[in-house]
Length: 405
Image (tube, rainbow, N blue to C red; front, side, top):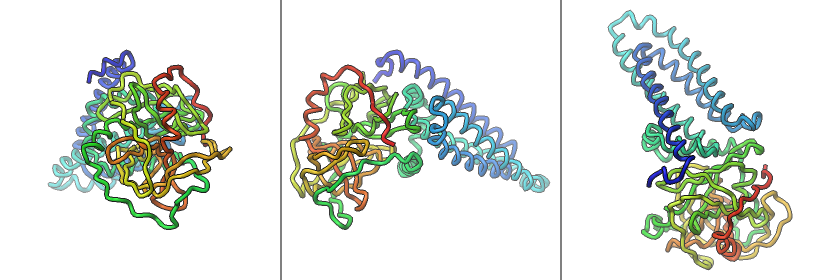
């Protein structure tokens, strides 16, 4: 697809991505030259310091937003640069104490060559970690520029999915962005249920995956970003949970193989925990809809757990019935039609679809059990279909409500 078809913001983002690539290439080349000049032992010290600084930055970025919500992006960048610089400087000084005697021997050249390789590798690792963390800020211009960056796309393709998932899980834990609670759910087992062996790579489910989107939101008043999932229900319309968007002022929607796009909230129901996003220019097609699944039926859960890479998981229906569910602020419990599922539901799965094995939407994931592992909950189509039917008609932007934490 042509990114320019999205209009001004993407054009501006493309210029930003070029500038970002230039800066990153300068950093990488500089790391290579510096590594050769300083040698392995000074670089090992620098590596240890950079890793320590990078880890400190990774954990501090979501916390800094709490202290300086109005300067969220700039403060996060400044803190990351400062912490990594401090760590690097201290590490270099320690490594230099070991290096001096070595350079009086024939191992000097080996020290320089290995130092160049090591320094470049660590620079790439730090860039990857910080880029991953920055994408979760939910700022459209930042996300679009990073998605257009050739350097970052290359690094992303080289990062193993388990590593990306781990980073996402750690960051979400720091953000402490929990899932809603479900009261008196039906059919909850006392022990963790076994998950069925659903063929998740079937043609129908593979096709459906193209219409499941990742949502990141910038919520300065909440002191953190928001992450969740959603799915396409009609042209330029995405359904998700309201608690994913609570307090959000800017949001980014990313479909597989598409550029991240800014979204507007056009429907927000904190009682039923449903929301609709208008995403102009979205190419992903609408998913087909089904009506209901009976207990024992196999299904699939799709989304972006912890805001990380796309994941499809097996599920089965344990029960289907009326359950007391509070609103997204934990108040006024009301009866809802809910599936109790055997499924691995995590933070970030919220708003993603529950799908039949034929790839049709049959519910919306919104919560997990806080007492039994591998038990999740989905709103049934009795709750969701009325919103989906009206989604194309929602056009006026609405407020995202107050924070849920």
